[in-house]
Length: 290
Image (tube, rainbow, N blue to C red):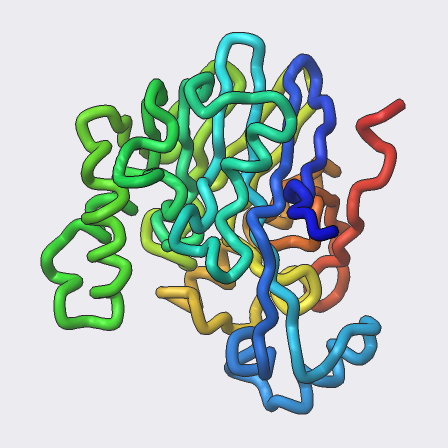
């Protein structure tokens, strides 16, 4: 017998909200030092991985879009790869949504931290809106950057074309956010640039409980959170990205609040503690259950 299992999902309460994390998939990256710590010697990266009981030559990268049920809204935060990733075992948000009892038609808001392909690929399904009744929110700076024809002929051209295909069709139903803008009551956008020019994080508060959805502010729990100053190949402005990592995770550590990071080990929710060179990642266990 062969059976396709539903994607991994993880659900918890945050005040009066229900947060569901879906594993959109995962893939293996070779030579981690080519992506993380690209301004470090490869052996320095290998040593840090080994110290943390991780393989030194390969890295597992996973993807974690989320669904927030507020009582009045059903919000999808980032959409994963969508149909384009399914041949590689990715693009499983839609399955996960349905596995926990939601229908795509119930989604009222799609909130995008930024406009890289693994965050916008699930906006369309068979050429039609994947969430037909939703409105859309993303950063104004982010949208303007990726839709600008100045991206043509640059390394960002592929991203530009993806945004034209996947995001621009929703422009009339889209709200463009600035730093501090509210998405719904209790959910606020914060500008966190560097990974991309208009990257946002979302701060969620419900009944005194808080969660920060950090998107791609940090993309690895050791090589980015543990060493926030190390350069990451995918960051558009590497110096600004490092400064933003410090700022956002300083806040999270100081306030002792949980965060959901799109590329953290599933279920992608945890805490950070400040250390000499960066931060220590502490994955969630039963904090939300008692």
